[in-house]
Amino acid sequence: MGRSTFEAVVSVFVTVHPHETSALLHSFFCFFFILSAYFVVLPLRDDGAISLGLSNLPGLFVGSLLLTLIAAPFSSFMFSLPNLSKGKALFLIHRFFSVSLILFFILWHSSSAGYSKSNFTGSMPLTHPSKEERKIGDQGSLTSSFGWDNHGWFYISVRIGLFLWVALLNLITISSTWARVIDVMDSESGSRLFGFIGAGATLGQLFGSLFAIGMAFVGPFLLLFAALLMELAAQTSRGINCGTSHAEEKLSPIRKSDSNHENKTDEIQKTEHTPRGSPKSSTSAKLPIWPIFEGLWLILSSTYLLHVSLFIWLSAVVSSFFYFQKVSVIATTVSSSVGRRKLFAQINSFIAVFILGGQLTLTGRILTVAGVTIAICATPFVGFVNLVTLAVWPNWVVVAICETLRKVVTYVVTRPGRELLFTVVSEDEKYKAKVCIDVLVQRLGDAAAAGMYKVLFGTLNGNPSTVSLYGLPVCLFWIVSAYSLGRRQVQLSKHQISST
Image (spheres, rainbow, N blue to C red):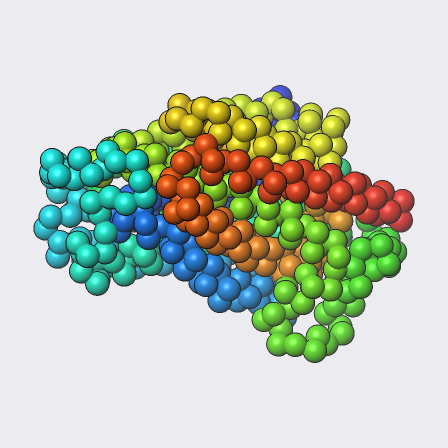
């Protein structure tokens, strides 16, 4: 009765077949718990970064890149272990991050207890900013009254560590979960269901943001709740499978292919897509490198995956560029620590409402009718329009509107379309190469944007109008790259369908 009720509710928004219900349900709630955990702790992380000084923010993005360079290969390595199933590897990744959040709670609470003048004191009453802090905080620059000189090394280390770790958690857990979802669905089912699955992530963003607004006063105790949510994500990830309790006895009905068809598909992919060939060939043939770098090797061996990497790198550059503008405006406008936490959470929740509505009502229809090419071109086009708008009207209201529009289009249209890009690759490339692309390439884009933003603000004296103009060539190149990549995915998808 419970499953029938769920299917009736889901059928209002998307077309789902009975054998897809289990995978859809567990995918939806797994993303819900991951994004809830992320957005519960995100305002605390961003506020901690601001306390170290805005001038140090680009450096944190560079540090995040260095951490990713180390962590991304290990994440791919988890899916390469022969005695560990893909589902078990995903479960262990989620649980690992759950335990790490508990450790950060202990560290944050200990570092805050030793700093009596800090606003990070858990549930203790927060002190009001001084007149000098308010005066400096109102200045429109990348500097503020906060900085490393005002804190001890332990305080600084914990906040830097949390900033880097939360960014890594977001990338690895989401990418790994999407890899699992894509493995049990094909391009056709993904076009119908990815929007609804993404709605679970958006609902998690909304829930996490609203929870962070109401419970901002508890400070580091938000980390404990986030750890609980990550453990729930680990448990629900167990159910992301082929939609049958006899997975060992028959193939996934979502895939709708037998072993002979799979071999034919792999041959097509070997000639039309990547010289690495099929999942079986990649596991039987020994790579001439340490297995931990297999994901990177698969990327470098495929022109298609290199094209996907370029698309995601350009996406990260533009996204981080807008992030720096948003954080800079908030830091120079709101001087209260709790006020900043609430404002960050309010913005996130406001955006999530629009994204949720779009994912439940528009994503499936857009992907089915318009196709993947238009889907992945939508955000680059909106980004271009936003940069022109910011160059003409550089104020906080325009920044808020542009950020909302960009994120809505990204998560309603482009992000589901981006995941469809991986439905035409082999199993190894889904689990190993995809994680490296989503995590490593994303961080390379963030670091590039951080360097570009810091140089432009220093050279142009923080003029947002002029800074926005320098981002236009990046968006134009992004549009061309997205169009070419979308057409390539359509060709590979047709070859895959004809072979089966």
